[in-house]
Structure formats: structure tokens, C-alpha cells
Length: 223
Image (cartoon, rainbow, N blue to C red; front, side):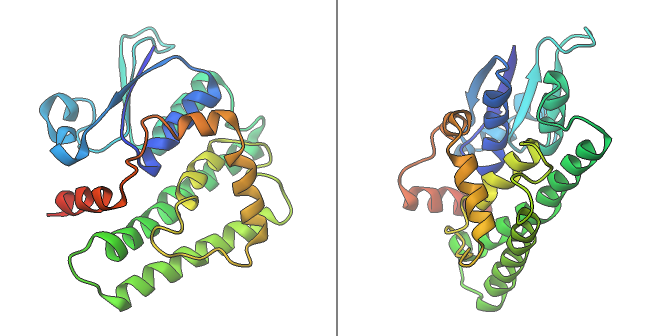
């Protein structure tokens, strides 16, 4: 059994989707970010950085007792290796999977995260900063679109790389990053969104329906 500590964010949804896709049994523990639960000592014992998501595998394959894993990309690699699925079938596809996973971890996630902050949550509007992150987010989307022009998924077959990038690209409207003209990216997004495991994973836990509450919570965390 795997214990998943998470919240309704793109990084959190990466792991819930992967668990659903891999059909690994797990217990969901929703973390209240607005109350600072992720900073409490019991949680930082699992993830010293005090961020979601994190998992504790109660029965890792090495038989050495419970194993904690934090950082969403590391969790995805761990789960894919555990199930031996969604991580490529040969050397080249495995490398492709890791490359595009790192593309999200080092590019799409940070750029969109900053676009979110400065567009929606920062106490003052700084147009030059907002434009900078929106433009870089759009550029990264164009890289994805170009790559997807000749393939259905990022690394050949559907993989953790697709899951990771999808959870961020799907919220492009929130920071105001357009996807006009990116037809390959749109096709890829629609294909992934239609997967039953993805639909279930995006509801673990449900995202707050009130946009104002989301903004207020994020601003509180930035203070």
C-alpha cells in the first residue's frame, strides 16, 4: 500500500494520475496547504522541503521497510519503476521519457508556476514580469507542439512524461498562456484528458470550485 500526501495542484495530480494509471493501491491523504499542514514536523519528516506531493510506500520491493519519496518527478520515476510501466520499453524510449519529464520539471512547471504567481496571486501587477513568464510558457508549449507533430505521445508510447506535462499544460488559461495555433498540442491534451484514469486522478483530491478561494489561499501562502 502507498500513502499519498497531496493537494489539488498540477504537481499533486501528476502522482494521483500515475497511481490510477498504474493501478497501484494507495491511500489518499489530502493536505490543507492554506493552514500550513505541509510545514508541520510530521510532514517534514516525510519531505524535508515541506511541499506536496510525497508518498510513503509501505511495502517497497527491497523489503527494507517503509520508503518515503518526495519531489513529483522522483515519485513518478519510482512508481513507474515499481510497476515497470509508463517508463519506456528500451534504452531510447526510457531516455526519451526522462528527457521530457525533466523538460517539465525544469521548464514548463517553473515557468507556469511563476506566471500563475505574478498573474493571479502577487499583491501587485508587474506587466513586464507577467509578460516574461507568459512568453516563456508559450515558447515551451511551441516546443511540445513541434515535437508532437510527428508522434502521438512525447516519448513514443504514453508515459509519465505525458502525465507530468499534461497536468501543467491543461491549466494554461489560469496564467493567461494561449495555445492558439498549437494543434498538435491540443490533440495530445484531448487524448490524455479522455483517459479514465486521468479523469479519476484529477479528482484526487478535488480542486476547489471557487476561484476566489484559490487566489486567497495562494496569497496567504506567499505572505
